[in-house]
Image (cartoon, rainbow, N blue to C red; front, side, top):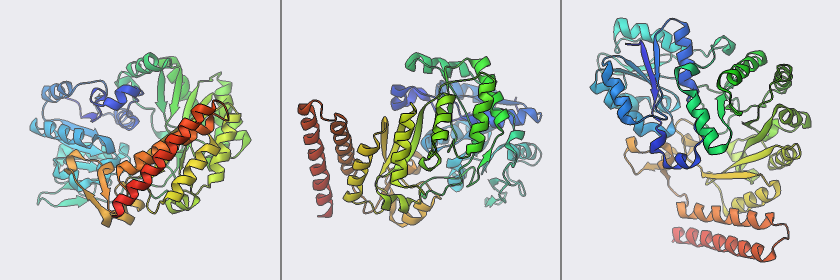
Length: 463
Protein backbone atom coordinates (compact mmCIF):
# COMPACT_ATOMS: atom_id res chain seq x y z
CA UNK A 1 0.00 0.00 0.00
CA UNK A 2 1.43 3.44 -0.89
CA UNK A 3 1.83 6.13 1.76
CA UNK A 4 -0.47 8.28 -0.34
CA UNK A 5 -2.76 7.70 -3.30
CA UNK A 6 -3.46 10.93 -5.22
CA UNK A 7 -6.42 11.53 -7.51
CA UNK A 8 -8.84 14.16 -8.76
CA UNK A 9 -12.48 14.28 -9.80
CA UNK A 10 -12.37 15.02 -13.50
CA UNK A 11 -13.68 12.24 -15.76
CA UNK A 12 -13.41 13.29 -19.40
CA UNK A 13 -15.97 10.78 -20.64
CA UNK A 14 -18.64 12.36 -18.42
CA UNK A 15 -17.99 15.88 -19.73
CA UNK A 16 -20.02 16.30 -22.92
CA UNK A 17 -18.65 19.78 -23.64
CA UNK A 18 -15.02 18.76 -23.25
CA UNK A 19 -15.57 15.70 -25.41
CA UNK A 20 -16.39 18.14 -28.19
CA UNK A 21 -13.30 20.28 -27.47
CA UNK A 22 -10.86 17.48 -26.54
CA UNK A 23 -8.06 19.62 -25.13
CA UNK A 24 -7.32 17.87 -21.83
CA UNK A 25 -4.29 18.50 -19.62
CA UNK A 26 -3.21 16.71 -16.44
CA UNK A 27 -3.49 18.38 -13.05
CA UNK A 28 -0.02 19.83 -12.42
CA UNK A 29 -0.67 20.26 -8.70
CA UNK A 30 -0.94 16.50 -8.20
CA UNK A 31 2.20 15.91 -10.24
CA UNK A 32 4.18 18.47 -8.23
CA UNK A 33 3.04 16.97 -4.92
CA UNK A 34 3.92 13.48 -6.07
CA UNK A 35 7.40 14.53 -7.21
CA UNK A 36 8.14 16.38 -3.96
CA UNK A 37 6.91 13.60 -1.70
CA UNK A 38 8.65 10.82 -3.63
CA UNK A 39 11.91 12.76 -3.45
CA UNK A 40 11.37 12.97 0.31
CA UNK A 41 11.08 9.19 0.49
CA UNK A 42 7.33 8.65 0.49
CA UNK A 43 5.68 5.99 -1.62
CA UNK A 44 3.15 7.87 -3.76
CA UNK A 45 0.78 6.63 -6.46
CA UNK A 46 -1.40 8.71 -8.77
CA UNK A 47 -4.75 7.54 -10.10
CA UNK A 48 -5.45 9.88 -13.00
CA UNK A 49 -9.20 9.96 -13.52
CA UNK A 50 -9.15 11.94 -16.79
CA UNK A 51 -9.31 8.94 -19.13
CA UNK A 52 -10.64 6.48 -16.54
CA UNK A 53 -14.09 5.29 -15.56
CA UNK A 54 -15.57 5.57 -12.10
CA UNK A 55 -15.59 1.79 -11.82
CA UNK A 56 -11.81 1.79 -12.33
CA UNK A 57 -11.32 4.15 -9.39
CA UNK A 58 -13.66 2.15 -7.18
CA UNK A 59 -11.70 -1.01 -8.00
CA UNK A 60 -8.45 0.72 -7.05
CA UNK A 61 -9.89 1.89 -3.73
CA UNK A 62 -11.11 -1.62 -3.01
CA UNK A 63 -7.73 -3.12 -3.89
CA UNK A 64 -5.95 -1.76 -0.79
CA UNK A 65 -8.62 -0.41 1.60
CA UNK A 66 -7.60 1.64 4.59
CA UNK A 67 -4.96 3.85 2.98
CA UNK A 68 -4.58 7.62 2.70
CA UNK A 69 -6.21 9.29 -0.29
CA UNK A 70 -5.43 12.85 -1.43
CA UNK A 71 -7.98 14.48 -3.74
CA UNK A 72 -7.44 17.65 -5.74
CA UNK A 73 -10.55 19.84 -5.80
CA UNK A 74 -11.60 22.63 -8.12
CA UNK A 75 -14.78 24.49 -8.95
CA UNK A 76 -16.10 22.12 -11.61
CA UNK A 77 -15.47 18.78 -9.85
CA UNK A 78 -17.32 19.29 -6.55
CA UNK A 79 -19.95 16.59 -7.11
CA UNK A 80 -17.43 14.05 -8.36
CA UNK A 81 -15.08 14.72 -5.46
CA UNK A 82 -17.85 14.28 -2.89
CA UNK A 83 -18.72 10.98 -4.58
CA UNK A 84 -15.07 9.88 -4.38
CA UNK A 85 -14.93 10.83 -0.70
CA UNK A 86 -17.97 8.61 -0.03
CA UNK A 87 -16.52 5.66 -1.94
CA UNK A 88 -13.18 6.03 -0.16
CA UNK A 89 -14.67 6.34 3.34
CA UNK A 90 -16.78 3.22 2.79
CA UNK A 91 -13.53 1.37 2.22
CA UNK A 92 -11.75 2.76 5.26
CA UNK A 93 -9.57 5.37 3.57
CA UNK A 94 -8.40 8.52 5.33
CA UNK A 95 -9.23 11.38 2.97
CA UNK A 96 -7.26 14.59 2.43
CA UNK A 97 -8.67 17.30 0.17
CA UNK A 98 -6.62 20.11 -1.34
CA UNK A 99 -6.89 22.74 -4.04
CA UNK A 100 -8.86 25.97 -4.41
CA UNK A 101 -12.35 24.56 -4.03
CA UNK A 102 -11.87 22.78 -0.71
CA UNK A 103 -9.80 25.73 0.59
CA UNK A 104 -12.88 27.92 0.08
CA UNK A 105 -15.29 25.35 1.54
CA UNK A 106 -13.33 23.67 4.33
CA UNK A 107 -16.34 23.07 6.58
CA UNK A 108 -18.47 21.70 3.76
CA UNK A 109 -15.84 19.20 2.60
CA UNK A 110 -15.25 18.01 6.15
CA UNK A 111 -19.01 17.66 6.57
CA UNK A 112 -19.00 15.47 3.44
CA UNK A 113 -16.45 13.13 5.01
CA UNK A 114 -13.00 14.58 4.32
CA UNK A 115 -10.69 14.05 7.30
CA UNK A 116 -8.30 16.91 6.49
CA UNK A 117 -8.34 19.90 4.16
CA UNK A 118 -4.96 21.25 3.09
CA UNK A 119 -5.11 25.01 2.51
CA UNK A 120 -2.46 26.55 0.28
CA UNK A 121 0.47 24.77 -1.33
CA UNK A 122 0.50 21.08 -0.61
CA UNK A 123 4.08 19.88 -0.86
CA UNK A 124 5.56 20.79 2.53
CA UNK A 125 2.25 20.40 4.35
CA UNK A 126 1.74 16.85 3.07
CA UNK A 127 5.31 15.89 3.99
CA UNK A 128 4.51 16.82 7.59
CA UNK A 129 0.92 15.59 7.54
CA UNK A 130 1.47 12.02 6.36
CA UNK A 131 3.70 10.93 9.29
CA UNK A 132 1.34 12.70 11.71
CA UNK A 133 -1.64 10.79 10.33
CA UNK A 134 0.22 7.51 10.73
CA UNK A 135 1.27 8.28 14.31
CA UNK A 136 -1.62 10.34 15.69
CA UNK A 137 -4.61 9.68 13.47
CA UNK A 138 -6.77 12.30 11.74
CA UNK A 139 -8.18 13.97 14.89
CA UNK A 140 -4.98 15.10 16.63
CA UNK A 141 -3.29 17.21 14.00
CA UNK A 142 -2.91 20.36 16.08
CA UNK A 143 0.00 22.53 15.03
CA UNK A 144 0.38 21.23 11.47
CA UNK A 145 0.31 24.48 9.54
CA UNK A 146 -1.86 24.68 6.46
CA UNK A 147 -4.48 22.16 7.58
CA UNK A 148 -8.09 22.11 8.78
CA UNK A 149 -9.44 19.02 10.54
CA UNK A 150 -12.04 17.67 12.95
CA UNK A 151 -10.74 17.11 16.48
CA UNK A 152 -11.76 14.36 18.91
CA UNK A 153 -14.64 16.49 20.23
CA UNK A 154 -16.02 16.94 16.74
CA UNK A 155 -14.91 20.57 16.52
CA UNK A 156 -13.28 21.97 13.40
CA UNK A 157 -9.71 23.14 14.02
CA UNK A 158 -8.03 25.54 11.62
CA UNK A 159 -4.28 25.53 12.09
CA UNK A 160 -2.09 28.49 11.19
CA UNK A 161 -1.35 29.23 7.56
CA UNK A 162 1.82 27.71 6.18
CA UNK A 163 4.46 30.00 4.75
CA UNK A 164 4.75 29.76 1.01
CA UNK A 165 7.71 28.03 -0.59
CA UNK A 166 10.08 30.93 -1.22
CA UNK A 167 12.35 29.20 -3.72
CA UNK A 168 10.22 27.24 -6.15
CA UNK A 169 13.36 26.21 -8.03
CA UNK A 170 13.85 23.89 -5.05
CA UNK A 171 10.85 21.86 -6.20
CA UNK A 172 11.35 18.91 -8.54
CA UNK A 173 9.61 18.97 -11.91
CA UNK A 174 6.10 17.54 -12.09
CA UNK A 175 6.00 13.76 -11.73
CA UNK A 176 4.81 13.15 -15.29
CA UNK A 177 6.16 9.61 -15.41
CA UNK A 178 3.53 8.63 -12.81
CA UNK A 179 0.73 9.03 -15.37
CA UNK A 180 0.26 8.42 -19.08
CA UNK A 181 1.26 11.78 -20.55
CA UNK A 182 1.49 10.20 -23.99
CA UNK A 183 -2.27 9.64 -23.90
CA UNK A 184 -2.83 13.38 -23.48
CA UNK A 185 -0.41 14.13 -26.31
CA UNK A 186 -2.09 11.58 -28.57
CA UNK A 187 -5.59 12.96 -27.87
CA UNK A 188 -4.43 16.44 -28.76
CA UNK A 189 -2.69 15.22 -31.91
CA UNK A 190 -5.68 13.14 -33.01
CA UNK A 191 -8.20 15.95 -32.60
CA UNK A 192 -6.08 19.02 -33.35
CA UNK A 193 -3.08 17.82 -35.31
CA UNK A 194 -0.64 18.95 -32.61
CA UNK A 195 0.23 17.07 -29.42
CA UNK A 196 0.53 19.34 -26.38
CA UNK A 197 2.05 19.26 -22.88
CA UNK A 198 1.43 21.80 -20.11
CA UNK A 199 3.89 23.36 -17.66
CA UNK A 200 4.20 26.42 -15.43
CA UNK A 201 7.13 28.81 -15.02
CA UNK A 202 5.77 30.67 -11.98
CA UNK A 203 3.28 30.40 -9.15
CA UNK A 204 0.66 32.95 -8.27
CA UNK A 205 -0.61 36.32 -9.45
CA UNK A 206 -0.01 39.61 -7.60
CA UNK A 207 -2.95 41.43 -9.21
CA UNK A 208 -6.15 41.96 -7.26
CA UNK A 209 -9.05 41.58 -9.67
CA UNK A 210 -12.07 41.34 -7.38
CA UNK A 211 -13.65 38.25 -8.93
CA UNK A 212 -10.50 36.12 -9.15
CA UNK A 213 -9.68 33.42 -6.59
CA UNK A 214 -6.27 33.30 -4.92
CA UNK A 215 -7.13 30.38 -2.64
CA UNK A 216 -3.91 28.39 -3.17
CA UNK A 217 -1.07 30.82 -3.96
CA UNK A 218 -2.46 34.03 -2.46
CA UNK A 219 -1.33 37.27 -4.09
CA UNK A 220 2.25 36.10 -4.49
CA UNK A 221 4.27 35.81 -7.66
CA UNK A 222 7.24 33.47 -7.49
CA UNK A 223 9.17 32.88 -10.67
CA UNK A 224 11.31 29.86 -11.48
CA UNK A 225 14.74 30.48 -12.97
CA UNK A 226 14.81 30.64 -16.73
CA UNK A 227 17.50 27.95 -16.77
CA UNK A 228 15.34 25.47 -14.88
CA UNK A 229 12.33 26.18 -17.11
CA UNK A 230 14.36 25.74 -20.29
CA UNK A 231 15.77 22.46 -18.98
CA UNK A 232 12.25 21.21 -18.25
CA UNK A 233 11.08 22.12 -21.76
CA UNK A 234 14.04 20.26 -23.23
CA UNK A 235 13.17 17.24 -21.11
CA UNK A 236 9.53 17.42 -22.24
CA UNK A 237 10.56 17.60 -25.91
CA UNK A 238 13.01 14.73 -25.64
CA UNK A 239 10.71 12.52 -23.56
CA UNK A 240 7.18 13.14 -24.83
CA UNK A 241 7.84 14.71 -28.25
CA UNK A 242 4.88 17.13 -28.28
CA UNK A 243 4.25 19.52 -31.14
CA UNK A 244 3.51 22.43 -28.81
CA UNK A 245 3.35 23.41 -25.14
CA UNK A 246 0.89 25.33 -22.99
CA UNK A 247 2.38 27.70 -20.41
CA UNK A 248 -0.31 27.64 -17.73
CA UNK A 249 0.99 30.66 -15.79
CA UNK A 250 -1.55 33.24 -14.64
CA UNK A 251 0.49 36.04 -16.29
CA UNK A 252 3.30 34.66 -18.46
CA UNK A 253 4.87 38.01 -19.44
CA UNK A 254 4.80 39.66 -16.03
CA UNK A 255 8.61 39.86 -15.80
CA UNK A 256 10.12 41.17 -19.03
CA UNK A 257 13.73 40.67 -18.05
CA UNK A 258 13.01 37.02 -17.23
CA UNK A 259 11.22 36.63 -20.56
CA UNK A 260 14.20 37.92 -22.54
CA UNK A 261 16.60 35.67 -20.63
CA UNK A 262 14.33 32.66 -21.07
CA UNK A 263 13.94 33.28 -24.79
CA UNK A 264 17.72 33.54 -25.20
CA UNK A 265 18.24 30.27 -23.31
CA UNK A 266 15.67 28.45 -25.44
CA UNK A 267 17.42 29.76 -28.54
CA UNK A 268 20.79 28.64 -27.21
CA UNK A 269 19.34 25.14 -26.76
CA UNK A 270 17.80 25.28 -30.25
CA UNK A 271 14.32 24.89 -28.77
CA UNK A 272 11.56 26.65 -30.66
CA UNK A 273 8.28 25.01 -29.78
CA UNK A 274 4.93 26.55 -30.73
CA UNK A 275 2.97 27.58 -27.64
CA UNK A 276 0.03 29.51 -26.31
CA UNK A 277 -0.31 31.20 -22.94
CA UNK A 278 -2.16 33.86 -20.93
CA UNK A 279 -1.12 37.39 -20.07
CA UNK A 280 -2.45 40.85 -19.28
CA UNK A 281 -2.70 43.66 -21.78
CA UNK A 282 -0.59 45.98 -19.62
CA UNK A 283 2.27 43.44 -19.69
CA UNK A 284 2.22 43.33 -23.51
CA UNK A 285 2.70 47.03 -24.23
CA UNK A 286 6.24 46.74 -25.58
CA UNK A 287 7.07 45.78 -29.14
CA UNK A 288 10.15 43.95 -27.83
CA UNK A 289 7.97 41.74 -25.63
CA UNK A 290 5.74 40.77 -28.54
CA UNK A 291 8.68 40.28 -30.89
CA UNK A 292 10.29 38.02 -28.30
CA UNK A 293 7.12 35.97 -27.89
CA UNK A 294 6.85 35.54 -31.65
CA UNK A 295 10.48 34.50 -31.95
CA UNK A 296 9.97 31.92 -29.18
CA UNK A 297 7.06 30.37 -31.11
CA UNK A 298 4.01 31.93 -29.47
CA UNK A 299 1.12 31.49 -31.88
CA UNK A 300 -1.72 32.57 -29.57
CA UNK A 301 -1.94 34.67 -26.44
CA UNK A 302 -5.04 34.91 -24.29
CA UNK A 303 -5.99 38.23 -22.73
CA UNK A 304 -8.60 38.80 -20.04
CA UNK A 305 -10.37 41.82 -21.48
CA UNK A 306 -13.58 41.18 -19.48
CA UNK A 307 -15.36 44.37 -20.58
CA UNK A 308 -15.15 47.24 -23.02
CA UNK A 309 -16.46 49.61 -20.37
CA UNK A 310 -13.76 51.37 -18.38
CA UNK A 311 -16.26 51.92 -15.58
CA UNK A 312 -16.75 48.16 -15.21
CA UNK A 313 -13.02 47.45 -15.48
CA UNK A 314 -12.37 49.90 -12.68
CA UNK A 315 -15.13 48.35 -10.58
CA UNK A 316 -13.43 44.96 -11.10
CA UNK A 317 -10.11 46.50 -10.02
CA UNK A 318 -8.55 45.16 -13.21
CA UNK A 319 -5.79 47.73 -13.39
CA UNK A 320 -5.90 47.98 -17.20
CA UNK A 321 -7.56 50.30 -19.69
CA UNK A 322 -9.73 49.51 -22.67
CA UNK A 323 -7.17 51.24 -24.89
CA UNK A 324 -4.35 49.03 -23.56
CA UNK A 325 -6.33 45.91 -24.47
CA UNK A 326 -6.99 47.21 -27.97
CA UNK A 327 -3.36 48.19 -28.54
CA UNK A 328 -2.00 44.89 -27.18
CA UNK A 329 -4.42 42.87 -29.32
CA UNK A 330 -3.57 44.67 -32.55
CA UNK A 331 0.16 44.77 -31.79
CA UNK A 332 0.27 41.04 -31.08
CA UNK A 333 -1.44 40.36 -34.39
CA UNK A 334 1.10 42.56 -36.19
CA UNK A 335 3.74 40.18 -34.85
CA UNK A 336 1.86 37.16 -36.19
CA UNK A 337 0.38 36.13 -32.83
CA UNK A 338 -3.31 35.29 -32.63
CA UNK A 339 -5.23 36.80 -29.72
CA UNK A 340 -7.91 35.05 -27.71
CA UNK A 341 -10.04 37.35 -25.58
CA UNK A 342 -12.09 36.55 -22.47
CA UNK A 343 -15.18 38.68 -21.84
CA UNK A 344 -17.52 38.78 -18.85
CA UNK A 345 -21.16 39.81 -18.76
CA UNK A 346 -23.17 40.69 -15.70
CA UNK A 347 -20.57 42.12 -13.33
CA UNK A 348 -22.17 44.10 -10.53
CA UNK A 349 -23.46 47.45 -11.86
CA UNK A 350 -23.33 46.60 -15.56
CA UNK A 351 -25.88 48.51 -17.68
CA UNK A 352 -26.84 48.28 -21.35
CA UNK A 353 -24.38 51.10 -22.10
CA UNK A 354 -21.58 48.88 -20.80
CA UNK A 355 -22.70 46.05 -23.09
CA UNK A 356 -22.73 48.46 -26.03
CA UNK A 357 -19.23 49.61 -25.07
CA UNK A 358 -18.03 46.00 -24.98
CA UNK A 359 -19.42 45.33 -28.45
CA UNK A 360 -17.69 48.42 -29.86
CA UNK A 361 -14.50 47.42 -28.05
CA UNK A 362 -14.46 43.94 -29.60
CA UNK A 363 -15.11 45.40 -33.04
CA UNK A 364 -12.19 47.79 -32.63
CA UNK A 365 -9.76 45.33 -31.03
CA UNK A 366 -10.80 42.53 -33.42
CA UNK A 367 -9.35 39.52 -31.57
CA UNK A 368 -9.06 36.26 -33.47
CA UNK A 369 -11.22 34.45 -30.92
CA UNK A 370 -13.39 35.66 -28.07
CA UNK A 371 -15.34 33.83 -25.39
CA UNK A 372 -17.95 35.17 -23.01
CA UNK A 373 -19.07 34.08 -19.59
CA UNK A 374 -21.50 35.48 -17.05
CA UNK A 375 -19.76 36.70 -13.89
CA UNK A 376 -20.12 34.32 -10.99
CA UNK A 377 -19.02 34.86 -7.38
CA UNK A 378 -16.27 32.51 -6.20
CA UNK A 379 -16.36 32.19 -2.44
CA UNK A 380 -13.85 34.29 -0.47
CA UNK A 381 -13.16 36.67 -3.36
CA UNK A 382 -13.83 40.41 -2.88
CA UNK A 383 -16.61 40.14 -5.47
CA UNK A 384 -18.30 37.39 -3.45
CA UNK A 385 -18.00 39.40 -0.26
CA UNK A 386 -19.56 42.43 -1.96
CA UNK A 387 -22.69 40.62 -3.17
CA UNK A 388 -22.98 37.67 -0.78
CA UNK A 389 -26.14 39.06 0.84
CA UNK A 390 -27.86 38.92 -2.55
CA UNK A 391 -26.95 35.28 -3.27
CA UNK A 392 -29.03 32.16 -3.13
CA UNK A 393 -28.39 28.60 -4.28
CA UNK A 394 -31.39 26.80 -5.71
CA UNK A 395 -29.65 23.43 -5.94
CA UNK A 396 -28.16 21.17 -3.30
CA UNK A 397 -24.60 22.32 -2.52
CA UNK A 398 -23.12 18.96 -3.55
CA UNK A 399 -24.72 19.14 -6.99
CA UNK A 400 -23.95 22.82 -7.56
CA UNK A 401 -20.89 24.99 -8.17
CA UNK A 402 -20.21 28.66 -7.53
CA UNK A 403 -21.49 29.23 -11.07
CA UNK A 404 -24.98 28.25 -9.88
CA UNK A 405 -25.42 31.12 -7.45
CA UNK A 406 -28.44 33.26 -8.26
CA UNK A 407 -27.72 36.95 -7.75
CA UNK A 408 -30.77 38.89 -6.66
CA UNK A 409 -31.49 41.77 -9.02
CA UNK A 410 -29.35 40.42 -11.85
CA UNK A 411 -30.76 39.91 -15.32
CA UNK A 412 -31.85 36.46 -16.45
CA UNK A 413 -29.76 33.97 -18.42
CA UNK A 414 -31.90 34.77 -21.45
CA UNK A 415 -30.81 38.42 -21.20
CA UNK A 416 -27.16 37.39 -21.46
CA UNK A 417 -27.91 34.99 -24.30
CA UNK A 418 -29.31 37.97 -26.19
CA UNK A 419 -26.16 39.93 -25.27
CA UNK A 420 -24.07 37.14 -26.79
CA UNK A 421 -26.13 37.11 -29.98
CA UNK A 422 -25.94 40.87 -30.25
CA UNK A 423 -22.16 40.82 -29.79
CA UNK A 424 -21.44 37.97 -32.20
CA UNK A 425 -23.66 39.20 -35.02
CA UNK A 426 -22.49 42.79 -34.68
CA UNK A 427 -18.83 41.74 -34.75
CA UNK A 428 -19.39 39.32 -37.65
CA UNK A 429 -21.05 42.10 -39.69
CA UNK A 430 -18.22 44.49 -38.89
CA UNK A 431 -15.60 41.95 -39.98
CA UNK A 432 -17.08 41.77 -43.47
CA UNK A 433 -15.58 45.26 -43.94
CA UNK A 434 -17.86 46.29 -46.78
CA UNK A 435 -17.76 42.92 -48.53
CA UNK A 436 -20.97 40.98 -49.15
CA UNK A 437 -23.46 43.72 -48.34
CA UNK A 438 -26.32 41.24 -48.23
CA UNK A 439 -24.70 39.12 -45.55
CA UNK A 440 -23.71 42.22 -43.58
CA UNK A 441 -27.31 43.43 -43.62
CA UNK A 442 -28.57 40.02 -42.49
CA UNK A 443 -26.10 40.01 -39.56
CA UNK A 444 -26.95 43.57 -38.58
CA UNK A 445 -30.63 42.64 -38.59
CA UNK A 446 -29.92 39.68 -36.29
CA UNK A 447 -27.86 41.93 -34.04
CA UNK A 448 -30.69 44.45 -33.72
CA UNK A 449 -33.19 41.67 -33.07
CA UNK A 450 -30.96 40.39 -30.27
CA UNK A 451 -30.67 43.92 -28.84
CA UNK A 452 -34.45 44.25 -28.92
CA UNK A 453 -34.80 40.87 -27.24
CA UNK A 454 -32.38 41.97 -24.54
CA UNK A 455 -34.33 45.16 -23.90
CA UNK A 456 -37.65 43.29 -23.84
CA UNK A 457 -36.26 40.73 -21.39
CA UNK A 458 -35.02 43.50 -19.12
CA UNK A 459 -38.40 45.26 -19.26
CA UNK A 460 -40.25 42.05 -18.39
CA UNK A 461 -38.00 41.52 -15.39
CA UNK A 462 -38.72 45.03 -14.10
CA UNK A 463 -42.50 44.50 -14.28
